[in-house]
Length: 219
Image 1: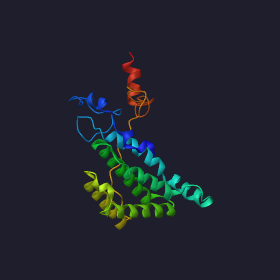
Image 2 (image 1 turned 30 degrees about the horizontal axis):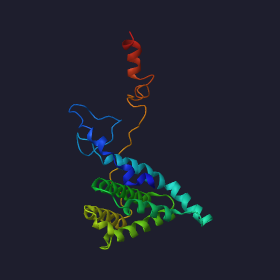
Image 3 (image 1 turned 90 degrees about the vertical axis):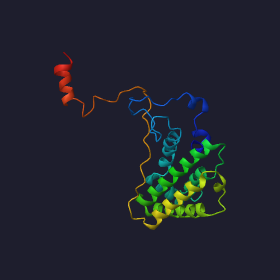
Image 4 (image 1 turned 135 degrees about the vertical axis):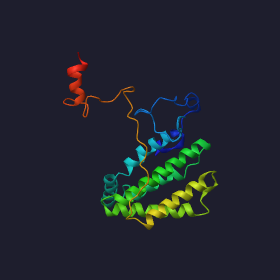
């Protein structure tokens, strides 16, 4: 849960100050974080990527089914509902220290809702779908409530409104395909600067490029 804390996901101001916009003519590549801001660095998307790594692993359908099973076999162990409630708490019950943290927290909340909808719509185990749907219904009612303390934070009202609308749309049409855009991909990391595994198909042994390298490029 600490990996979802906004204090862990924001970038230091000293780093943001030295990240210039990407020069015109320099294409994107696989080692860059996705961005919604065009050429300037997107300070929010890395938090989306990082939080989705944690939330998507916790809400994997097979792991969710194991949580249901382990709680049934030993009620002293946490079940799926407890895990989901902890995720919701991490995304909605944290007080941000500043506007940047508040925006990152909204990103975590969006990731949590999207992954819950995916779980509720596609998990093979019906008990998992039932629990995820129930938690979404409870969260939707909470977001609609005027006493929600999160509404006091500037910028949360429109965000909560959209989340509530998206949850309602799913609950009203659970059989309809969920069309929420896929979360941004994760940069592959080390080794930084690697140009890719170019020797694998379609560029591998037996390919046109391999034959060209043997016949022409190696002369």
